[in-house]
Length: 343
Image 1 (tube, rainbow, N blue to C red):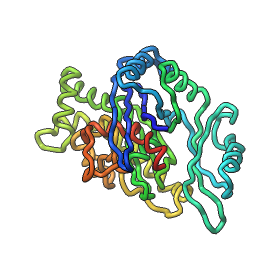
Image 2 (tube, one colour):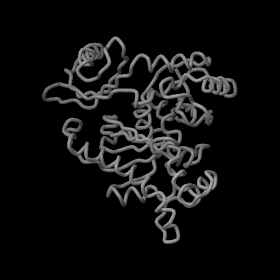
Image 3 (cartoon, rainbow, N blue to C red):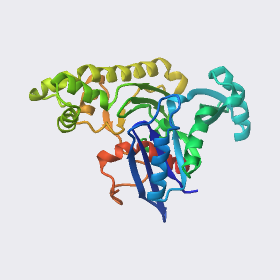
Image 4 (cartoon, rainbow, N blue to C red):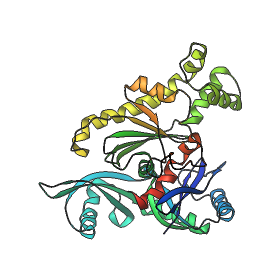
């Protein structure tokens, strides 16, 4: 069933529709609603303000069926091996393993799995399992249904972003960095599957606040400086770079931890035993000038802005109505569409 991909995060609601016609794809309706009050973390996303926003979006854009993102920081992800069996038998076997890996009783959780690789010698499958507490899922179901929307499927936001950003034939390990307004989410990826995720409470707002304090200016002025000058290491911008050094260092350190984790655990996740080959940036704050260059110099790895249309169309055949800068905010929403087609 064709549906609109929708992501609800504390900073905004984002949605996008991808239309298929004659084997080609194009962007249909899309939009963003900035949230001024999202509620506290314990009850998110069940806030009257969010419901009102969804009702407004449904009416304005005639939304109905949706595929929605679930927050990966509320989920548990683990890898395991199972015999090569029928899908229902694999699921039954995995259910017996849940208590070994997650602190949620099977009766209180919903889980799904992705086949990562097949070992022909042993005829066993390596699978990645995602487990989400029923309470978390029910909050999102209640929110969407109360707004008159019908969720047809859910996907972890981390996996949705990977669906969009990494080519279908690319199995190499990478780290996806999703920079938001309030936090930054890191996804460790191999064979187009998220194996580990972490979140750091440092986002675009922290960079703005650092500039504001250092130069003793207003938040609006700091935001303008950040957008216009970025973090390029130019002599004339030395003071600006210095003001951001601690915040940027915290982000770099978190990425380094994930690289080290992969180096010490990659045998568990990858039969190719490859090292992390690159960093992919996405999210509303990823377009900060000089950011890829900073991470590349600091980490010694190739760093690039993601292309959310990677698996949908080529710019040679279609130019989307969303700019490259703006599209970085829609990685998750776009990847939700790809869940049905190319995952």
